[in-house]
Length: 530
Image (cartoon, rainbow, N blue to C red; front, side, top):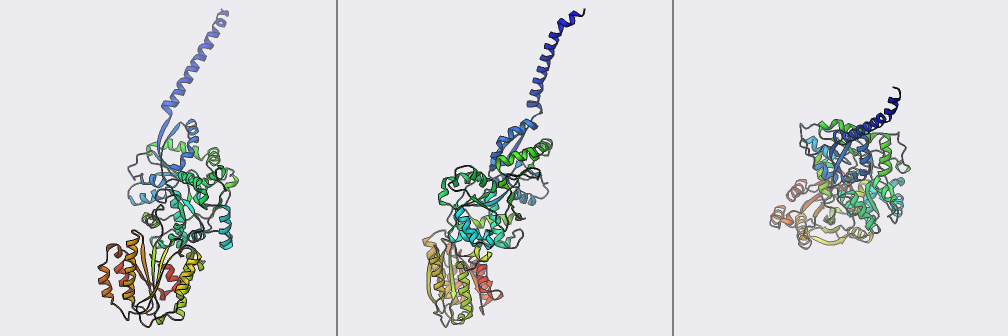
């Protein structure tokens, strides 16, 4: 009796092993087909570098992320509050989307979790980095120093399109916030197109995504000095072996915008799967792998940072809290693929009342615009490379005028020399001079269709000769539509008629600045033709 069980034992063991194998197969099939979850994700295009980790996410959590990639701003625009078409959104930044959400009252905010970090910074070739530090106060480079070098024509940079990418928009917010000098989030009144023009003229390369910008920079690196993008992108470029010169990373001392790569839960019914993904992404082991693969900064102190990621990034700049402010900022910056040059006509009163301290103040203002003003504001509003300038001196008539296209120090010196002239006149024909300036604007509009034109009128007295304001307005109204679109920005000085100048500004679409309430150089910096 005892021998029988011994003879059957091998068959039972085989049967048991077969059953376990079949059970294991059934369980594996269940894990793949029944227990796994697929989440549809709208993602920023720069997150393609996370693809190799998503297989491990699926293996460890049973959650499969089906990624649809778009440029970040485009992705944010594709998220309609309350009518989402994806389960999750994974963006380099959701700030613009949150502003849209704020306007759509009644729509609850999606759950959002930060997954990694990378500031938008400036990568600069070594020689240019040394030059920037040599000119910067205390050797600490600011956005104003970057804008100054761009305006002077000494720094040519690449930056992704702010209309489509988070890196481009973040850089633009950084520059504009620094230009405003308020230390707080940008407001509508802080945005001035003139303070972005000099910076904009240095942009020689753009792209619709950060990845495309990186490849374009590699292809055209010999004609560029710098690249403005994510810290992670710059470190990856330096490590990629395709650069003739590695880029030194500059963290502007006045701050930068930090990208935090939030994962948003758009479909609350997928909360359980979302939590699995978030917990996996935030784990120390995954954070370490993200850092090693993408060179983005890990979230916590429990992950030992790569030495390249230990630089202090200082204080993060505030992002505007109103969508209209961001839209105005991007609109003022314009299309980075189009020419940047504006034509500004400076109409300067050289009547005898301007002799002495007043004309000295005027000359100081023009010296500042030519680069002598090293304040942060001065660096943002200086004459910039490629800018077209007409300067007219007038008394009882236009005495003399000169056209200059800024190409270097010689052109800036020519402007200063022209303003240094001493041919004052005994009368003041404000409206005849302004009518003459509009004749000049008409010629420019004819010869250079589409070029932005503006007029800055500086006077310290009242109209004593020539045509009346009413006659000027009649002539202005009869001009072509393109010429009527040229705004005049009066700058009141001394005893000039406030009401008359204000009306001229309103008629033409400009605005008046009263230089009696501040110094004349500060008034010129404020108005600057827009």
